[in-house]
Image 1 (cartoon, protein in one colour):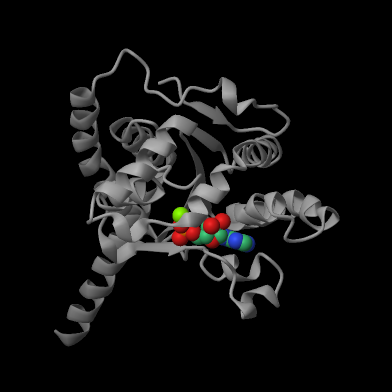
Image 2 (cartoon, rainbow, N blue to C red):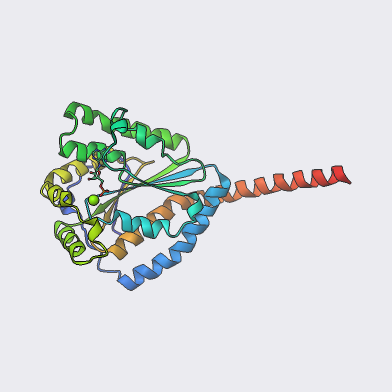
Amino acid sequence: MPTLVLDEPGKKIDLSDVDTDPPNNITKEEAQERLRALSDELFELQDLLWGARTHSMLIVLQGRDAAGKDGAIKHVAGAFNPRGINVVSFGVPTPEEREHDFLWRVHRHAPRKGEIAIFNRSHYEDVIVVRVHDLVPKSLWKERFDHINDFEELLTEHNTIIVKFFLHISKAEQEKRLLEREKDPKTAWKLNANDWKEREKWGDFSDAYEEVLERCSTKNGPWHIVPADSKWYRNLVVAEAVRDALKPHRKTWQEKLERDGRAREAELAQFRAQKA
Ligand code: AMP
Ligand code: MG
């Protein structure tokens, strides 16, 4: 899979050089078949995560308007048991949120043990949209890369497994999707003049994303640049990356559940012995 995974800081990325199309060696049918098979595996891994209660997971989705954040969430979250999933969307900060530091509203949604939190936009908006629209002075947002890295390190120390996705679409594909929304009464509710306004700042957003990818890619919080012009490929890439992040823990979680199971059995045996 040619998806770019960045797991250390310092690599300069030129997004205009990165594919937004799927590779040639996979068809839509193959991708959908693989995604179906993955769903069972994701469900099972989440069950272990939930039962073992030793880890949590944070999935961050970023991307331009119409990049497919909602669609990716629908497909990935759809594989899981809703019991342990928390989807959080971050929009324009409320007056209360603005009176706190930028991580305040984010930290309270960090996943608890056993849970998976999916962020539709995130703390990264505070170095992306905020930068593009000059919402805070540069001296302030420049400091935020370090704050973000420290924050994610803190979550990692608390056994949060972090995966971050940049859904990478082309300018032409974005235009196509925005225009399609106008044609379909079922999606017209998504129309937003602001999307067209943001589109005029395409290059500024690219610069902002490129600096995020360069500065906030870490071993414990890798960024995946997902070619997102085809929805079927995007869904597969995201689902596989989530599976790959969970899978190394499978054995540990299974062992923990077996230990817990034996402890419960012993308690039950003791209870029965006392009654006898
Ligand atoms: P949507 O994701 O389409 O519902 O739109 C949410 C909007 O909120 C987007 O235009 C974001 O750029 C904006 N947004 C999210 N976080 C922030 C932030 N921290 N500061 C300013 N705008 C934000
Ligand atoms: Mg939008």
